[in-house]
Image (cartoon, rainbow, N blue to C red; front, side, top):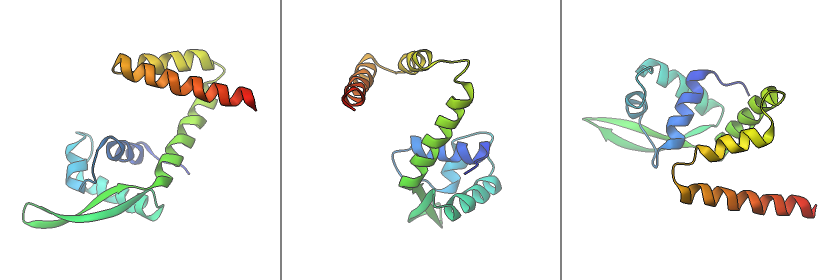
Length: 128
């Protein structure tokens, strides 16, 4: 599935939120998004089952739907990331990519947790 920049941006905003968001909250999260763009993007994401309506809330005096992610959205984003990596693999080898990802950790504890997860994954792969 092909996603354009705005669609990826809306998915990113929803992934970074700890709760479902209204379209207005999504617009307020990014200066480059407009209400009409977000509404169009949400319609497409709904049709493709990447987001779902998770509730209704008051936004001022108006009832607004809140949108959250579906499990399918994580799979699609993972697939997109891996496709992007495949296209750059000749330039950026796996150790360099992993080192860069570990350097993105916000805390040492987060980095250590990621390393432990990777060690477990590598141990499982070696068994196979």
